[in-house]
Length: 416
Image (cartoon, rainbow, N blue to C red; front, side):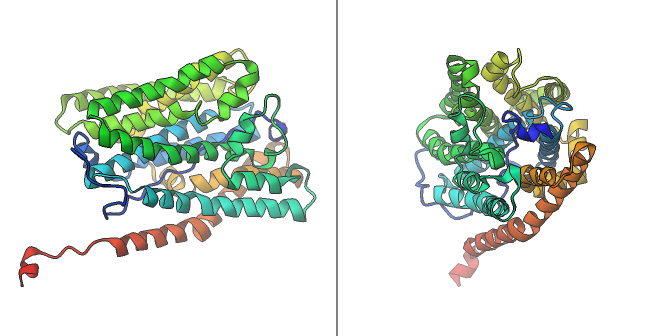
């Protein structure tokens, strides 16, 4: 169980992205601008959930759990966080651009509210339980967990970790896995504002060009920053990880730009189908062979261009899952069990796996028993989170959206 005591073995996955469509009413920030929605009308095409993305999410979260317990099995298992960042950027941007194409704006308050309801209640429950454990039980790995819980609830664990030049401090150790939530939530705060400005005041090609440039800037910034002593700064910074989310965002914008009869979409579909299997294989090879968070000769490459490479590989897979539903990777990742786990439990598994495994370790579960026991206990905790916190809130949110839906009165009835 030495990996739970290693400061560099604390990287985790991203939560499940928002899947509910934006409310149908015109948002407060909308204000139909000149050419609102023009150029991205294809964002309204389809709109159904892509089961393969849920399956990919389930595999990624299991990979990260295995990495946290047995890093020797998958020394590069933290690549799961790269996969989740790109998926999140894709799904969130697809929702935002679809809302813009439909209404001419983005309801910022509505978006932030949905994000908060989706992520924060379950996170706060996990933080409260962890803090309670630190007070009630004298467990070594939970010392100071109340402070870590406060930082996690404020979504600033990544910022604290980015400031550590040596080994990670004990301040965030009990809930250090929530660093990736901080990166995600900071992206969610800034990206809708920037995207809305681009969509309203720039032409379609300019929007795509600007986002493409934004994808490159973090690579340049990481190259400038790179030094072994800056590894924590690069790994945890929202600015130095932004390209992984933005690659997913760029893919969503490109798909929203291309009409169904556009030959470039057909070409993209063909190439996505061809590149998906080798992209999956390369991601698996990274997880199996590259010690991302340990000191190695791979560090200068991975901490500069490696994050972008992982994001591009993930984008190839996401594009294939979106455009080639009949391909064998899509069919494999769309099997019912991984899809259900990825859709309903991945966020809860992410939240609970680290404190659960720490608890089992402190209670004496070691060796070969820790991984199966940790997976089983994590699933149980995630199921409880889903049944008692996440699903009731999701139902309430859907009910609220239905109440806000405008009643459409037929013209003939209005005439009467």
